[in-house]
Picture 1 (cartoon, rainbow, N blue to C red):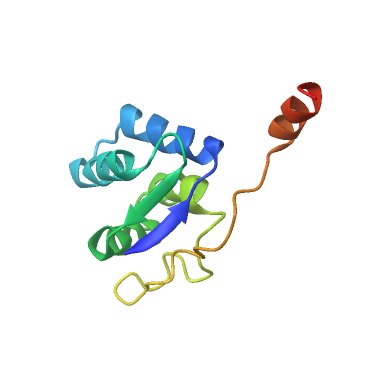
Picture 2: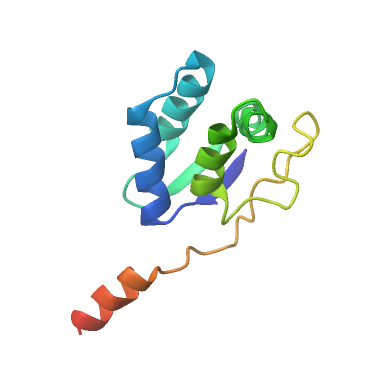
Length: 114
């Protein structure tokens, strides 16, 4: 199982994508499963190997570029360089020690609250 720490923006993107849906029922199911796995408060998500494989599979699918775009917008900061290139053998989605980076908006809010 791989552990990812999403920032607030990435969590919001995942939740939005899961709500918005997709015309492909299998991709929609993947989004809903990921949405259920993420801790809304901490952004932590533990991804089992079967879902990891699906993330890479949909990331490699050139038939619908929006799948790759959706997944990359959520996991792009923490994905390995081989994202979507070899979905059947790829296991390196995550750098579990990588901390979320603050967006400029978060830095502005922190500065104003001081």
